[in-house]
Image (tube, rainbow, N blue to C red; front, side, top):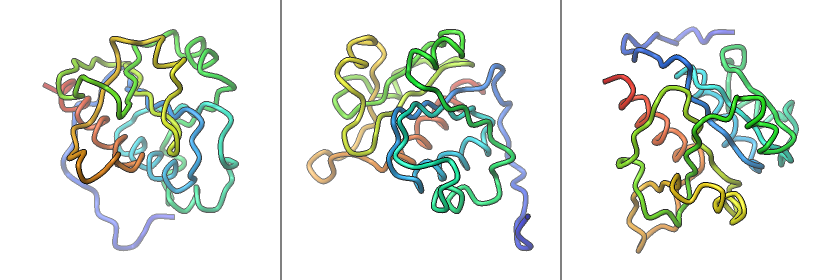
Length: 168
């Protein structure tokens, strides 16, 4: 159901083909994933969820955060990261981590790239990070004040920076 007060935004990007992929490895907090699903719906990005999830896909908080946009987002659960790679055709992966030495603003994104994020409480595993030593990115923050950004905020920043680059 559409909200009566909803208005369509006249601003759009030339959406990439193939679309970008947002990959959440073992997400734990339903509202974060719901917010990310809404951002994916707004951008045409495909949302890949790597199990185990910290919730079920019919969780009320997950559905509430995604509002009425669930029909507009492609959500693809996978049993493992390797299962994701196999089903997605081994896309170029960018791993987001607070320990990265390279800023996302220094990366060069391309259509079809996968933006990979770890669980809220622990981030990506050392094992997964070791698979992509040259593809680790961070979002600059004032580290003397904050350890990290909220997952849904980080995904939004990364996804829109990738879209900005691709749309040039």
